[in-house]
Length: 142
Length: 128
Image (cartoon, rainbow over all chains, first blue to last red; front, top):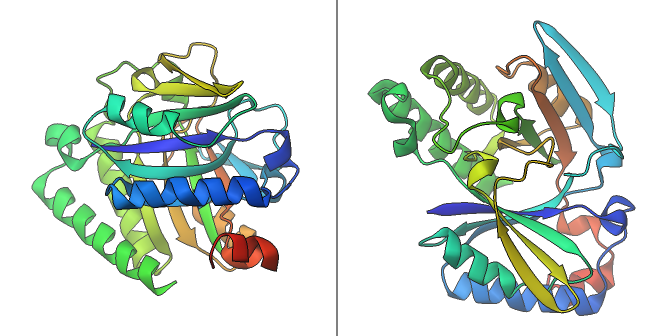
């Protein structure tokens, strides 16, 4: 099973404060453990929401709002994608992460093709697999 | 530049644990995904199961405490993402415009950090 581990934004991440060396080296060690255990699939950090935009969909209308999104309590600062056997295993790994000071992290299971049932027809499934293979090739190039 | 288009689906405010998108939406999404691929901008994409199946871990005072979902007080939770390569935020926002979203949905466009965005001492500490 794959899980997306979502690190929530806080005042520092939203202010664009970069992590100090201590946190970076601890995080580096933790990431290394994840890689060695074959758990780590991907990980990224995001720029503050002040550099972002939101688009709201209503009928055919699209409204764009530029960041920051100070009113939102669920802003994201970064994420990992992990491969584990269960949600409990994801929780166990996460508890070893070098966070503190009230940081909140969310664990969300990723949909796999089989979860969609008959909605994902064989044709759509083949198309989806092509899309993923192509995206992976493109990601390696960048 | 890499951007994440984070989907915030209205339906995830009270989606049940067995929620899956409709066949119609899956078909539309696949078509949209293919348009991203054809343009050579798509780097990754995933859909997330509803927040009711989530867990949260809070780190405080040297301790980590886990809580299972649902999180009824939580608003605007993510339901999936595309990661794309774009020349500017405007270009990323334009791609978001074409996504097959439902009424009340939001797409949040966020720039991904690159190693070049960090000062040299930070890069060294990260071993890059």
